[in-house]
Length: 403
Image (cartoon, rainbow, N blue to C red):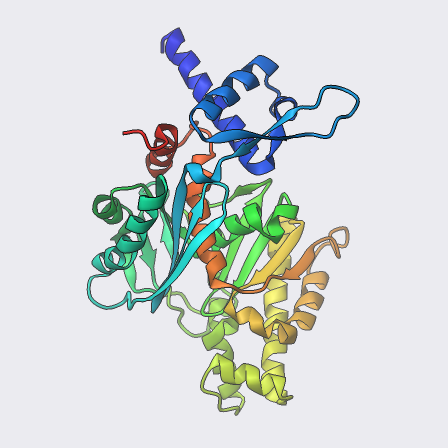
């Protein structure tokens, strides 16, 4: 590589580092940027001037003086670009449009039976109008998709989802060709963890676990501020840990997964096996709220099992917090006591009571925000190791609407 090419590469990395720091900590002064990034003042000045010239960041109000000359703050220009995020479920698609600083511009909720017909064309039909509308108002960086399934990092955008009935479906490539912009696909719990890290309770912690309850059991891992996806994009598949080798067959094909016991269907199945005829998770929750003994026992047993499994995970990962979310968290008041006891008893003595357990109000819009945040996260990432969709997002931000 030539010396000039090396300088260009270093310049790209510095630009990305500065932009990422402004996005995470801004508005921020040049002096604080230099301290955080351990870059020279001339480098910071050069990079920020280029970003200001490109319209991606701007100067803001001055800091309060500390006895010296006040420093001008640098912040992201939200209007410079936007991203679309969508959470895909079995029967509908929830979406949001956000600008570059994460401000929500609009939301949508479209009915969609993704198990029938051609799901690729269905997604184009549902998302196309919203992408077009967003692109008419802002320079659009890309589309983020969150769904219950795995996306192999070695083959971005190819999705396998037992819950949706998809096997190696090339969502990414199809949407890129049809919509004409970068597409990033990830597990929906990962997108929620990203949203929590950037905009939610998770922003208070460097390392945390997002646990989702409901139709399935999901887990998102953030360690030292970074989402952990694993070599095959399947890290965090908590629901498919085997807890009963002789148990019922899971949708994934294995027997006795945690999901078959403590997810919605498992809870209803357990209640019926004990003589309580309930037709749905909603009915089971209503029975427990009314004081029905079997219903409350089902939740207590599920809480114990879930807490024991999370105790093992937390012992290995040592997170600062465990955030509980998902539609099934509506029943958290029936799960919480037994869960906390099992979590406490299952950890090493030195770790006990050192993880915050917080129920985070469930909101589907937050899942869509997380999907959009996949795009913003890519835009603010460094080019080192970036491939495919991430590079495409970064290139669109660098162009900033220029053809």
